[in-house]
Length: 123
Image 1: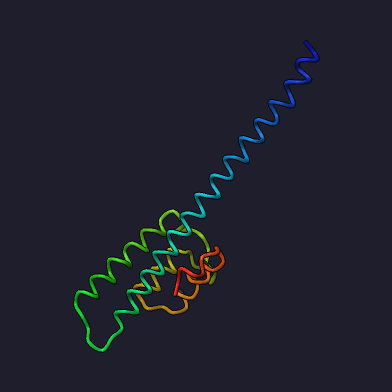
Image 2: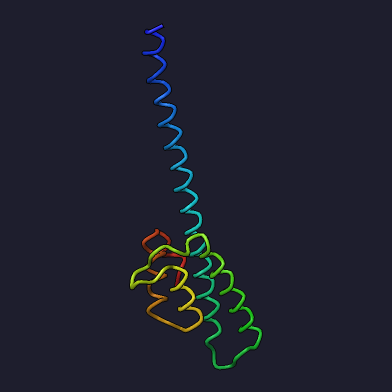
């Protein structure tokens, strides 16, 4: 019986450790997916906003930019409390960039995307 316990205990310990690291890996992948989605939405908003900056305003362009901004803000929900510097969270900086044309806030969220490995998704 003692031999069986000596053999079983290390196996159980390995299963528990493997289970934890597997869960951690899934969490990290999910976080990466959330960040990629956010940065994609941010880049889409930047592109729409930049296209809007023309000499002949098109009323439908304003609607499009607003809808795209809404999608980007919605993408911050699971990440909203992540710090981006300057005492701001990702959600606060995103809203400031989109609603107040805050270039410093926009720089912070763009840097967040770069630090997350998604610098090519933003403009």
